Length: 248
Image: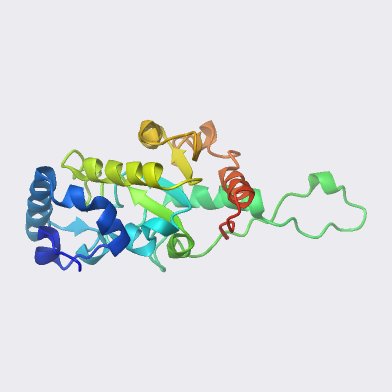
């Protein structure tokens, strides 16, 4: 039987049962009660994202025993209509944020099909197709086993990192550690310094860790573009008897 915890009682938030079982010690801890009180007050007195029902969307979309890939973000998008609980993802109809646009560019470079080669042209000069997805909704990835986890699960409107250091990092670190300890052959995609700092939580003897620069326009050309993480991830999954992710 599911047990309510304070944030559920005040904000109608639910978390998927397999994750609840893994994270129950966190829900029962003193720090989580303090975090809950902070989040409740923040949502009552300021505009915060994502909407309360989406705070645990990453967990609800990707049950613990279904996780095949973990992508780590930092905190939710902080502008109206963007955040819905999955890192880097925005709902349909919302313009693609710059980092997500760069993610799509890398995907097309890895999986895009080359256009037809016209007679007499040199195949070496023909690039890959450049059509990018129209929607920034990554729910389909989550449904395939990609845990799209921000290290902080809430944020105040217009203020990046405003809910960092309040306890969410302890909670999401516990989620990463649970995957590392109790699952095998999960691929962790760590982009940028903040994500790469989480490597210490992961047993690299039984998981695949891929690291590179963040897809932000400020750093994408320092190693994200050309990283081939999506292809490498799928190769690893197939080598270990798992269905690859349909990224595009």
